[in-house]
Image (cartoon, rainbow, N blue to C red; front, side):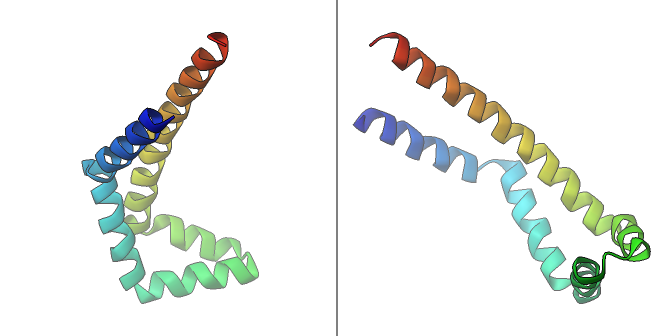
Length: 94
């Protein structure tokens, strides 16, 4: 069990150093600084106006952010699949 925890910590460290993760965090900070975009997103969440949704989606900064977020989601999916294989392997050995 201790070995698994150590491997998970190692994995977390490696993930945090990945270029995609760094790029994602950088884009997230850029989004946070874009007051107009944040205002539009907040207003959209309250009103659901389709015109605001289109405006948000057309924002290149937002699109770049969502692209990186999608890439990271695929990485997370791959990691989860590998973890599931490891868990299943451990159950078979019992």
